[in-house]
Structure formats: C-alpha cells, structure tokens
Length: 422
Image (cartoon, rainbow, N blue to C red; front, side, top):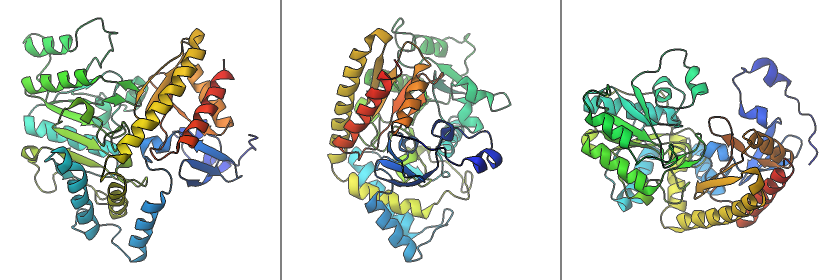
C-alpha cells in the first residue's frame, strides 16, 4: 500500500509532545466501520488495536449506533451527574439481569467517573476505607492507570517517573511466573505477611490483572489466581481484579476471572463496557463493602447517559446467551493456530507467543523487532501496537466481532510483516 504524506502540521504545532499512538500510525483517520479504519486519503486499515480494548464490538457497531441515535433524536438526557435517569435505570436493570445475576454476583455498582483510572482510584480508596490500612499490593509489570493512585500500583518505570513525586503506599510482588517457576507461588509474599520483622504493613488489598495487557500480555494461570484469592482471604485483605482491558468478553467469558472460579471483592470495569467507545467505567464491590458516605467520591461525568444507552444495547445484543463467549474462544483458537505456525517458522529468532481468548502477544529474542513489525504492518494496512516494559511485545487486540475472514487477513499481514523484518 502506498502511503502519501498526510498533513500533520497542526498536530505537531499545537498538540502536546505527550501524544503517542499517532506517532506509530502517521496518518489522519477519517472514518471507521467494524474492524476497519479509513484515513482521509482513502487508505484502508484493518484494526487489531480496537481502541486499546475499548471497541470489543467494532467501530460504529450498527445496533449500538441505532440505539444511540434514537436516544439523542428524542432529546434523551445527555449529562446527568448521578441523577436518576431512564437511561441509567435501563442499564442497571440490564447489567443486573444479564451480567450479575447469572454469575451469582451480588456486587453493588458504582459510577466513579468515565475512565479506567477513575475506577481504580475508587477501588483503592474504598479498600483503604474499609480496612483502615494504607498499603496496597500490586504485581510486577502491572498497569492500572496514569493518575497518582493508579500509578503507585503500576510497575512501568517510565510511566511512574511521569508522576514527578514519590508514589507511596504500594508494594510490588512477583506476578505469575515472574521468577520463571524457580520458587513456589507466593512464598515471598506470604513470608512477609507472616513475619512481624519483614517491614511490610498488612495491606488493605491486592490488585491484579488476570492478563497483563500493557505489561506484555502476561497470562496468570487459574491456579495462581485461586492461590492469590486464598491468600487474601487468609490474611484479611481484599482482592481487587482490574478487568478494565480484559473484561467485557476479551478473554471469552464476560469477566476474565470466571475461568479461575474466583469472586473478587472489588472489580474495576471500563473500556468496552459502553460498547461504543464512549467514556464509561464501573467499580463493583460486595454489598458489605458499600460504606461510602453520599458524595464521598464523585465526579462531574460519572453519569454519562449516552454510554448507558449503548452499554445496555451491547449487553442485550451480545450477552443474553453464550454465543459471544463461544465465538471469542473460536476466534482465539484461529489466532493461536496462526501464531503457532508463525513462531515455528521463526524459531531461529527466538519467537514465542502467549495469550487467551482474543488477546495475544508475539515476542522475539531481539526485543526491538516488535516495533519494526508494527511499523511494517501499518505500511501494509494493519494497526498493531506494542506492549511490555520495553515495547518488546507485538500485541494483537482485534474486535470480538471480527469475521474469520477478516481475522485471517490480519494474521496474513502480520506474517508478512514478520518475514519482511527478519
């Protein structure tokens, strides 16, 4: 595909140097539909990025778009803070009936603000309020957001350095297989908790991702997650599962922790919960933890009614039966088969892959190669991002609604990009 030089002058002159994704994809996008994006010059790109996991149902999903347009055309409430609205009622009833009750979850729903970081901040505040303790345990290579509380439980040194102040009250522990299986799970964590001379104050909670997306597509085993849940229970700590990127069906089930058979005390949800890419987040917690005073945690945009509309439509459309889960697992098997063949072809380069459902990572012995593959993929019409502390992982995050033919097309482009950067 021939790429003409786009006019990026206003972005370079006016927008902050903090911009990032646009540097890897130097074009000006204009339209998007399903699994494709189109730039202003008419070039087509197959999207294996999905708004960093915010577009599980694709761009401008027609069912969700129709629900949103109908709501706006009848002058439905757009901004309502935490006032009761018909849109919020419809979402809460749908979320309760379609997601919570079928899974035996009695968790309360909190709208903390529109972003994942808002959800994490609320979860950390609530855990500390409930337990009366300051420390939160997180895990190596974790990513939980860019606000100060979320950064304190994030592992990436580059992102942490942006805070400009000490990040306190967070204690990192090894994620699953961080020590290459050389020590039993949680031996260090448990020893610190049991030893009064360890210097570790008893934490209020542990926060964990079942699959570390930004951290490099690191997949926790179900038995490791069960061990963590048991450890938290025995040591009077709350378990927070950050399901912001891996929830809403990304790994197959609606919640990524379902496979492990655990029930977190607190769950953070954002990204694809609105279904349409609209800002929205939830913090879910067991009813007995709901000790907030009215207004103790709030925000101007915590009640984003257009997002309630598309979220309810997404749940009604995709989660009233098990077809979406089955489709995601099937697409995951298709992806894994292609990656297995690709890794076998490039075994000489130390290629490996890992993932679950519809999130996958591809790595090579030469770590900088991931960025070169993503650059070449863009030139060939495929949007991919890197992840991991050194951007060493090629990360695949297609829409859950992608067709087998579109998925195969993207995997062929990826294979070509890998070959052409060998």
